[in-house]
Length: 232
Image (cartoon, rainbow, N blue to C red; front, side, top):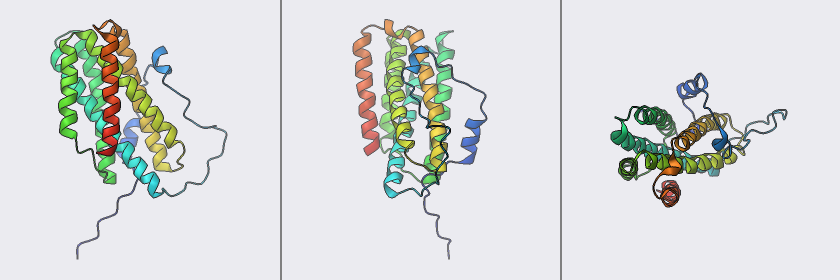
């Protein structure tokens, strides 16, 4: 008789992923712009921890939705930076800068890949669309010039920063050791996304042609993508 397959455990964070993050020496340099999006997530450090409670089905469903959206978002971000890099890689300053941000996004996606697989959470069914749309957005804005590429990065990372902050506030309501690990991961990723936001602004994002309209369209598109990924 074949052994029964272990039922999914939501949430289980692979130990190797938690270790990668906790031992990293990289400390994001959060400056003026990013701190506007950075709330105080942690509760009173002097308050004694309460006994963890088992996750309810509602909480499991919420976590699965969060992780599916985060995975889709990091997938899209990877392809945005891939598109930007394809166009601007020969620029001696901009090329390496985009590659550095892209490398961080690759790690983010790898971590969420592992978490989804460990918990058998279905990823978004629209993966081919996110890849195509992300590459088109990254390459398209890069073809408009370095400033437009940075305006794209600023717009995307602004939405992602708010999105991760919203998730962190919800995760604070759940007292569970694996959820605490997830909060640590999301906080780390949030900080790196906001570092990208600061970099984009420093690299003249606001000087892009039609900056206001371009940023507004991209931000609305990102918000719509988050809503769709949570459902599909």
